Image (cartoon, rainbow, N blue to C red; front, side):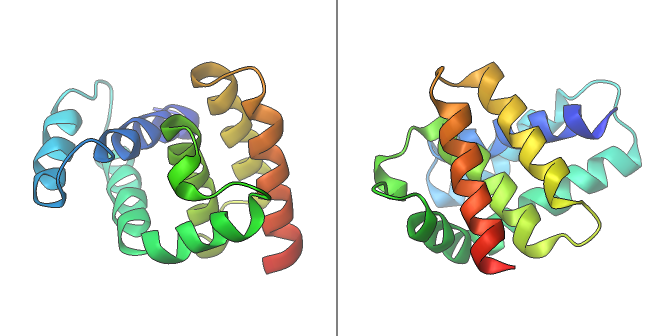
Length: 135
C-alpha cells in the first residue's frame, strides 16, 4: 500500500471519529481497520501510529489550526477539511521523517478528492502559515 493510500485511510478514520462518542472511537477504528485491503504489518503500524498521534495531540493540533486558519475556528470548519488539516498538522508538528512539502501536497490532494472546490486553496494556505510560523 502506498503512503498516499494509507493517508486516505487515516483521513477516513479521523473523519469518522467526529461522529462517535469518545468511548466508541476505538471500536469504530477497529471495525474500519478490518476492512482495509492489501495492507501489511508495516502499513498498519503507520496507520495506527498516525491515528494514535493525532488523537493524543488533538488539543495542540486544534489550537494550531485555530491560530492559523485566519477567520475560522475548528468548530466552524467542514468536517472533511478538519480531518485533513488534523492529519497534516500532526505530521508537520510531530513526524520528522516526512518532508513538509510531501505532507502539504498529500493534504491538498485529499482535499481535491473529498472536499469542495475552494478547500484545496484554504488547506494549502493554512498549512503554509503553520510551516512558516511554527517551524
